[in-house]
Image 1 (cartoon, rainbow, N blue to C red):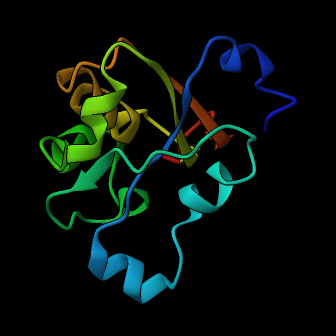
Image 2: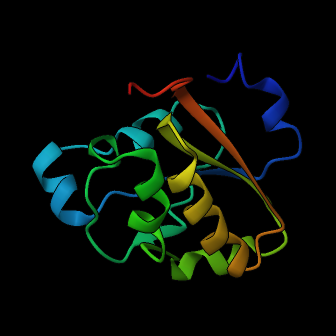
Length: 128
């Protein structure tokens, strides 16, 4: 990810993994975004928290994904010291960008100057 997304890293202060809801974290046993973030060579900031459990995005049609995650993320208290910084939001997969957008909005509301996104995979088409 670091090699293929090299241009995303220029001037970034650190990476922010997309958080899982605590219940999903317990069920899965790990946060895939946090695992990916740890290997990118920049400081990892857990600057987001999920405020509510949401349906799995994978199980939803594209049109419902934005509504599903709207308001589901807020900046953690620790995000305050990143005000004015450039951060890289890290997730495993991007399909419609709904989760990335919801997270970026929360980070921007906390004063982060620029939010870039890096994912391990991107879905280029949805099955009908």
